[in-house]
Length: 84
Length: 188
Image (cartoon, rainbow over all chains, first blue to last red; front, side, top):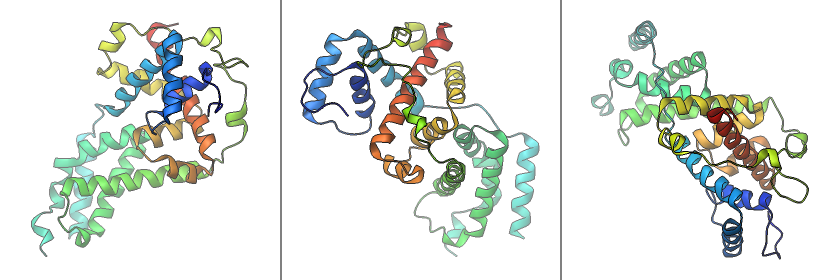
């Protein structure tokens, strides 16, 4: 995404690289540019950190929603009927 | 009938239905739809009992069927809404023209309270609320990518978008989710 020739990138470009690095391997140049930007920009550093936390949370996403007993017994009936 | 030794549909509800249901519920975010998907999964499994070769466990086999049902569900959902150019071309709420953070969008530190609660159920409620605040397209992409772990190639194909448009969308979704978590958690 970032302009190929600049060493200094904008916050918009830095946050994009920060998002991309979770999924693809960044080029050495981009990794370096992101690193430099994060050293000097506290806001993008926060974004980068939060992004990692959010990724971790999403990968552990759980719910305590369950099927009711009625719903289970109708599923059970359905299966037994089909097996006959 | 080797497979019949390893597979017992009469136990499916008792052994697997809760797990499969919560898996589906998280992904479609709709109880009724999740129930339908579980039922469809069991019916499809019963129809295809002879294809179960015992190479994977009964449980993983059911998960596999369910995952395909969920992906079909997204396909149907996404097909009905073509990506419009203004979905990623409208005004940038996060960055100004020179690519710097706009003042109202600057990230604030998450405090330890939030970080320590990232495994709690309440936190997932917040995440869920934030997901619901996304527009339909963003929400579908969020589910496809982050919950169903569908690869970017497949998402681009399904939505008929280029890889650079894909990144613009993912970038924006991440910015929105982060901001929303911060806002709901601190009331900022």
